[in-house]
Length: 106
Length: 116
Image (cartoon, rainbow over the protein chains, first blue to last red):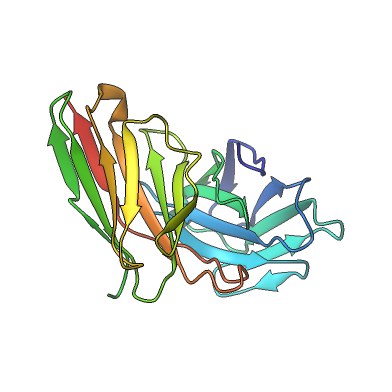
């Protein structure tokens, strides 16, 4: 089983921030958190990863709690093309859970 | 190559036949992963290669499934005596896996397997 848990689905209004949570309470000290997304019928695409500090790139921001037991992926201005399944995984355990199906609505 | 290449992109077979699925990872990537995704489901881990060795093959669903990797590059996933429940998209991914701090996975487009 995957070491992460995520809500099965979320909706977001176009142009608003999408905040996708992930719990990884059994994460160990040297394990990174990685986020991927899968748009229908394509292979998953890397978004961002982090260890303990918050990270930002051109796609998203990643907020990791101080105890590292959870994290949040933030898409600051969601567009319709961000509709996808978002997966959070922990390094050393490349097992994907069911992910969160994000639907961005006009 | 520029990305992870999988072949064939689509495979239709009859129940009971054997199939081979091929994955050509990004050049220089030492880690290679196979996943299976049934319709509407998440990714199911099958097997992980580091070089030619498979330290984790715990996800293979039965002894009908096997995989090998040669020359630290191309990998083949073989399914013997296919069953209808084997129908799925089989995805391959590779990564640099340097010091396990750079495990960004690059995925291929997958092989859609249909068992009739």
